Length: 376
Image (cartoon, rainbow, N blue to C red; front, top):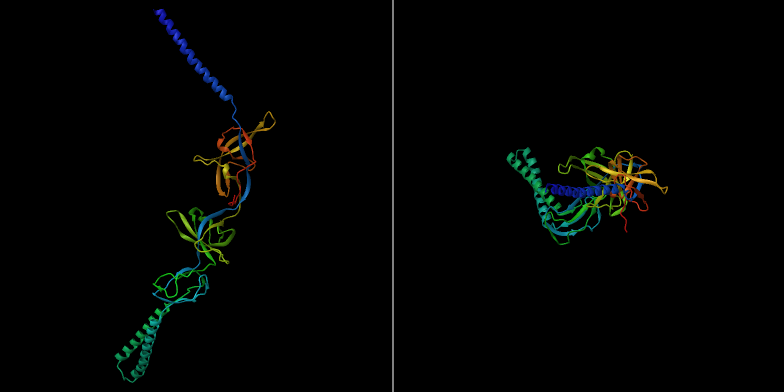
């Protein structure tokens, strides 16, 4: 029985040993086969890194507002008796725009003026009588006070009558009329807007780290989608002395020339500021950069001799880069790529170190420093 047991255990050990040995042999052979398999080549586009002159710019989107602008409204209520302007007119400072009915106010003014004239005559007579002591000092003082009071009432009534005549506070273009003849206006009710259109202000915000690159008087250029093929020149006229604590941005105001009155208050515009001297940077299309939390990378193209067909063998090599500012489709490379390096511009997502490459540049990514939308 012991001999049979030993034989059975030996047989079982041989069987299991054979099974495990076969699995180990199969795994080793599969690993050897896979390691012997070459990576399939991947088709990519490439670009040769080059140095280009780069003009540092600060861009921001701002809102336009008039150098002077106001919504005109009466200080007192009244009935519209006359309208002296048309919508869109150019008016001068002091031009009469709207007249409210002021018959009763003018009549009261005439009455007060008559009282003031009587008080003036009485006081002049008192001045002669006081010299000969014909009247008391108290009478003289009372008539002097009456004259001052009468003149003050006249001035007050004149100011009230003047408020019934709404005039342009400054020269500019008046907007669409909001009132009609015979309409009753309440105090503060809008009549029309008056705007000075040349020059205009462009207010915009920039991050606080850009403040060192700005100064009052620096040239700016503004564009708007209303006139996409035109640019408007101006300069920085003011920088807010306070940084917004919520956004860490600072407000900047530029003054733009607008002789043809094309720019209107309320429009938005893209403002470009040429800051500093031009610099030379290595530039690449933004599509060539793989951005990730652990670092930005590109794939360089390396030649590994020639293949059996006599053509050069190209493989990918990953490299970390330090990027700078962007300009259109381009990004500045501060470190990691030198002029003359061939860089994969698209197709790098399927690459790793040593991947064979097939270069096909029949269709390449955009590399325009100032791209513009195109209708397809």
